[in-house]
View 1 (tube, one colour):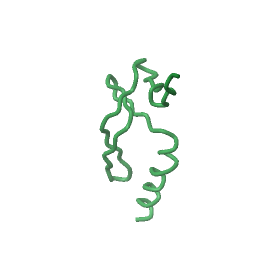
View 2 (tube, one colour):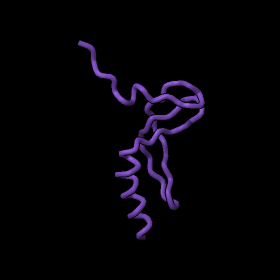
View 3 (cartoon, one colour):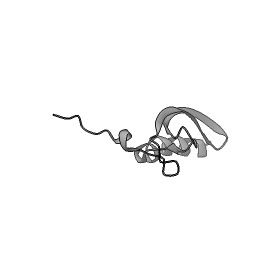
View 4 (cartoon, helix red, strand yellow):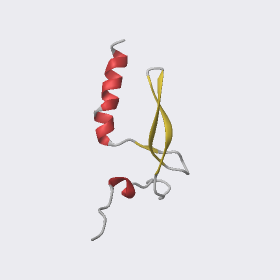
Length: 68
């Protein structure tokens, strides 16, 4: 029995054609910065933000910052 393919095993940089690796990145919004670990391209620095993160936690952070 083979192991299922994880979603992150299939994420490649469209520009560089290499597999993205997990690493520390800093997200910024309205003057605030947030250190997080996301998949990124080791060559060009492209960062992959999964849809569930963008529509979930990041949207909550944006709304709380905009209310201030």
